[in-house]
Image 1: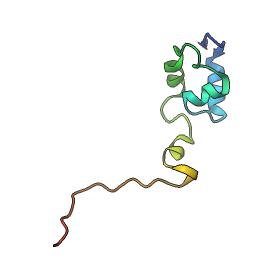
Image 2 (image 1 turned 30 degrees about the vertical axis):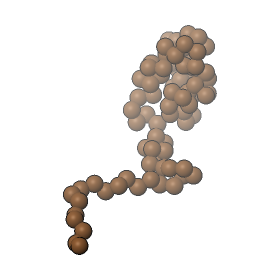
Image 3 (image 1 turned 135 degrees about the vertical axis):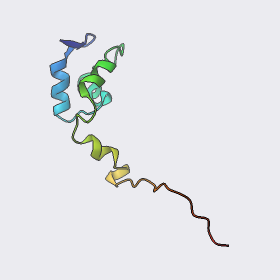
Image 4 (image 1 turned 90 degrees about the vertical axis):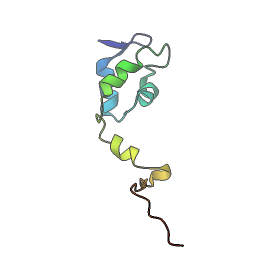
Length: 83
């Protein structure tokens, strides 16, 4: 079934690009132009990619610039400093 009628991109092609490492609609667009013309297929591409479909996604989300791990701030009750 076609996902992007503007460029003739099928579900199968989107899945193949995802298996090759394209984890976001923007990366899919970079690989095959799907979603770059009218944009009506972007939601369908998001659905095909699914949540957690890309094994690298979690790793990329925890890395900052130059691949340096990003440490989330610890949240909890604030302790007043002694004067």
